[in-house]
Length: 168
Image 1 (cartoon, rainbow, N blue to C red):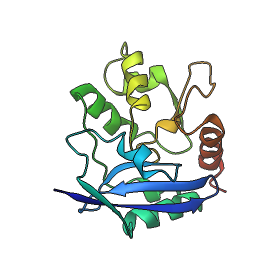
Image 2 (image 1 turned 180 degrees about the horizontal axis):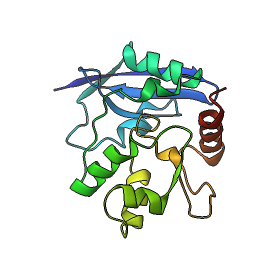
Image 3 (image 1 turned 60 degrees about the vertical axis):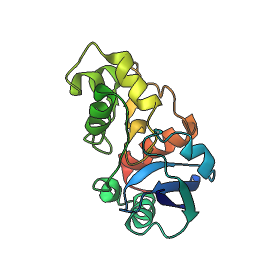
Image 4 (image 1 turned 30 degrees about the vertical axis):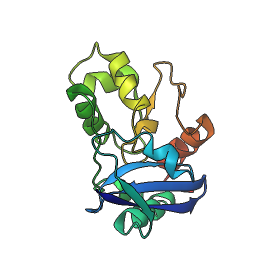
């Protein structure tokens, strides 16, 4: 049975919780204080048998640094998610979208190498368990409007503004 650690950090957007495996890899994260909510997003093959509250180590430091304005702090944090081949690839591609340079869903689909897969790209955003570290908030509708976001549109707007200016 595998054990993971979770921790909640206070951010300008409220509580942010991450679930991290024994190797320091993010399994799930988001602006919530509910570890159960996050665990429900983890693919069954990765879901830990036990989760204990503890020190997030480098992941917690990255969360704090990002919210304080060091936008690149999240870039090298390891993440593990499981799904089909396209979705896993799409999540990797999403990590290459730079802070302050959001893309449209069609632009995101194009970056994945499948320009016609706009709905599949949107699905990758919707099923992303590792919010912030896999920055689905950086994807917008074609008309520039926000679209959806699991943690609410005010959170998405704050993140985009934060990344555009580098300030809190």
